[in-house]
Structures are given as C-alpha cells and as structure tokens.
Image 1 (cartoon, one colour):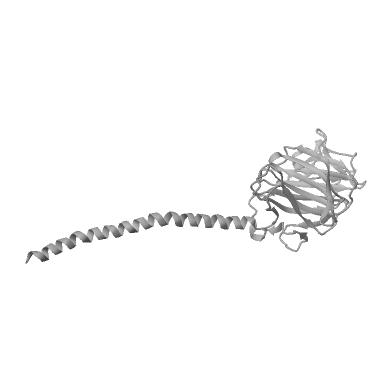
Image 2 (tube, rainbow, N blue to C red):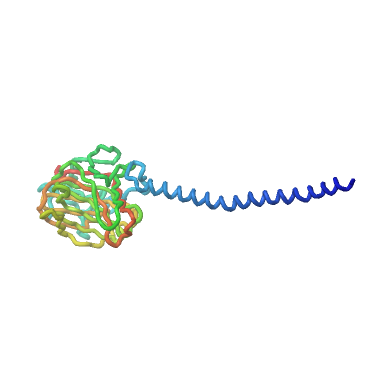
Length: 316
C-alpha cells in the first residue's frame, strides 16, 4: 500500500513533461502557420496602399524625385569671338538670334534662344505668365486627368489600352516663347508626353499644335490637330525624328517652343530640333498631355509630370 503513492508520483512526473511538450509544439505550429500569413497580409496591404497613392492625381500623388532639367546655358560655353548675329531670322523685325559662327547653331540660355539688337545688345522679352504649380487655382482644366503635385503638374491616364488625354489652360496666347520641364514616371515603355499650344475649343475636343516627345525612343514630332466632320484629323508638320538631345527614361527634358506668326521653333534641352512654318492657328491656349501607344502595357498607367512653366513675349 505504501508503494501506490510513489507510483502515482512517478506517473505524474512522466506525464507532465509530455503535456508541456505538446503545448510547446502546438504553439510552434501556430506560429509557423500564422507568421507567413501575417507577413503576406502585411505585404499585400503595403502594395495596395502604395498603388492607391500612385494612382491618385492629387497633391500627395507625386514628389519631385529628380532635379529639373539643366539650364542648358550654352552661351557660357561659347567664346565671344564665336558669337554672331543671325540676321536672316528676326523677332518682330527688331531682334535677331545669337548663333555660333563655327557651327551655325543658335546659342541658348535656359534652353531658349538668345536675342540681340543689330548692335549686339541683349533683348529681354517680358514675362507674360509663370506657373510653379503650387497654386491649385492657376487655371488648368484637368477634366479628371490632371492635378497639382508638390511643385509639379501631373497628367495621369489610367484607362486600359492606347490613347491620350490632357489638361488645358484658360489663358490665350498668340505670339510667345514657352519653356517648361517635363518627364515621365514609370513605366515609360510605349508612353509619350506632349505639349500643346494655340489650342482652340471645338466642343469636346480642340484644334491645336502638339509637340509629342517619346523619351525612351528619343524621338519627337510636331502635329496639327483639327476637327473635321466630328472626327479629329492629325497632320504631321514634323514627322517622328530622333534626337540625342532627348533624355530617356524618367529624366527631365526642357521643352521650349517659340511661336511667332507662322513660324514655330522647337528646342529640347537647349538644342534646336525643329522649325516649321504653318499659319493655320494664330492664337489659343496651352495643354499638357500624356499618352500610350498600342505597344504599351495595357494595364499600365501613363504618368507625365510638368514643372517650372514660363511664357514670355516675343518683343522688347
């Protein structure tokens, strides 16, 4: 009889470690099963939140991640003895562009051509309008595709398939020189951005000139959009042209357009890349746009950013 308590004690001592082991094993099993699930849920949550923020065209939708395009102050790199006046081109009959005598190229500053009088004195054109894209009331008609984003104006095309869209400004300009920095956000494959000018309302659409830049191809073209019988007709004034001046990927490109009468000059990063004469439209508004070609990823967004826009006159 005295042995019974000892047997009971031994049995209890043997069962206790076994029970504890089962508890520890259960806890480890739960941790091993639940931990990956929780990690996956957290990762999906982070991706969804990041995607939601990237899809927004509001103020929080973008940041100025890269420095704007270089000032391209070519005059600083051209010796004075190589600077001459291009008398064959005039600005309202009283100003002439400065050029390199050795190459014949126009000399630029901040990406725009420099004009002087016949005596060689610098001509300073008045600033007609500037926009640093910090004021949401500066006059852009976004039509749900554009928005102000921390010093940039963002034009976002989120629909599937090829197409384009833009935001237009309300102010009219006739003869002018326009300078702005522009870039794409990823993905850039099959995506282009464009700068419109002398846009005129035609119902839901508009007539206007359009400078199209495709950074990944390092190409640009100049188009004339016109509405005919309810459809848009596109006339290519300058066909797709490759230029090493264009920065690819998501880097900034400084775009400059000078429109005076029938003459239109195009500069990209301080280099003159195009010149054409067309008098179809003499005045109109500006437009900032983005588009996707048929070879772009169908589900990818087309996301363009514009910064530091300045419009000057073409007279002293």
